[in-house]
Image 1 (cartoon, rainbow, N blue to C red):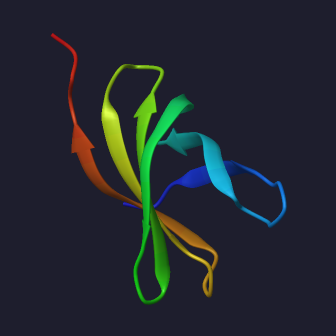
Image 2 (cartoon, rainbow, N blue to C red):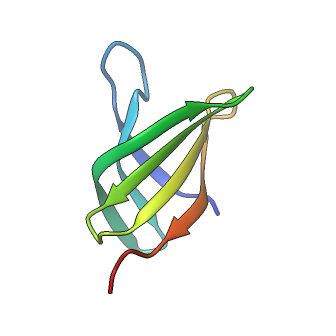
Length: 75
């Protein structure tokens, strides 16, 4: 699923996501819990302001973000 992502740009562009929009809802990222690299992609495991976990994939070559996984932590 494609999404719109706003990133923090420190020493490099799109260093880490800070918020993303999924459908009509915008989510603030409260914590980046993990980050890892694939051959062409960077993955971020984040906890959003709704308390749930999301795995976001960024393909820098195509400048495309996708939602890879979602896990509800809400009770």
